[in-house]
Length: 434
Image 1 (cartoon, one colour):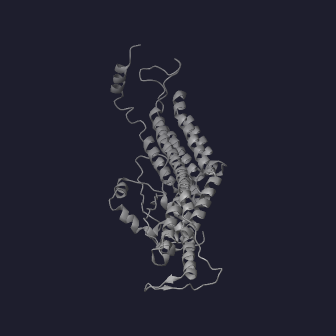
Image 2 (image 1 turned 180 degrees about the vertical axis):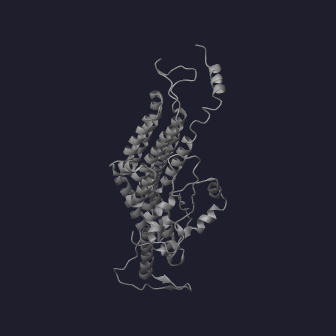
Image 3 (image 1 turned 60 degrees about the horizontal axis):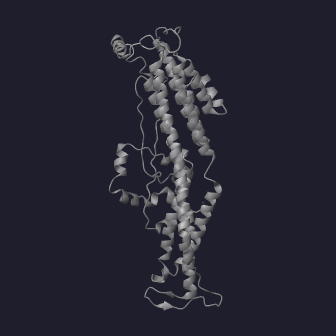
């Protein structure tokens, strides 16, 4: 939209909607093997940039989407439930990125309302500030009052409402599905690294019973350095997969340089080059993760259990690609936008008579602007939610996954070597007789 006028918004007495908060994380990542949890800093701030020198693209439109990557902690939930939240939202009314985004549409419908009001005053007479009525300024025969009956708009209102509700629900469902995909990634990356760490070099049960065949022997004593390296590779490739998936779902202009820099900083040149040069980077990273799992010294049955998580990663990746490449059917979105625009453009013609008791029917102008903001705002919300990945804090998810996995693999060997005789005795006592 070309026109982004604050004049239209200034006419309103509407309630404000809180803009999404920003979630930023540090770019530094942990080394291959973490000996302690990684501390991350996050900045949570409501609304678009407060810097008056910020370009308009950062305050509204595509540039503002990164400020809607909301991540809540307990403190933010307290603020969210605050009893004075309505007053705070009203205080940010003119900072709303949603309202600025629809400024052009609101200006158009408000201009139509101004035209209807002024034209009818010119051809039908007007009242001055003293309450005195004056004759029409334009008295030509062709000059007539313009207006429409309100009944058609009343009849169409339920249909328009249903269209907007279905449009918004469909978009929110897409956002919710994308968030659940990343939730599965977080859960199963932890699960994968937990199993790899706990099962490393443990091929037989404690009582000596083998998994498959009597010929299956216990593995050689664990080499701590080798274990650290191999489990470190599993953790590292787990992070590489989710980071590649984040890049795969993000705009190239926003994430390509950061992705290349992060991959090169954590992986070896050969590993980084293989992923960066791949046509489908998440698939390459997932293949490298499979190779890292295959190198672990453990029974293949347990490797199969670990690899189940990789199949889930393929599902979340495929589902995310489906959401990114397949919007809500365009004919539905376009019909809703056309229906709404036409309804609001012609609405001022039907509002002229209902506001006859106001001075020169002037209240119809802010009323039209208010209605336009409310309805155009609903449609804009649906449009913003429809593509969910650029408003999800995926970088934060990736950093969190990397830190969690590094911490999990750092626990290797803990509880498995100390007091092993006591643990073995307890397990044997609980074993059923055979």
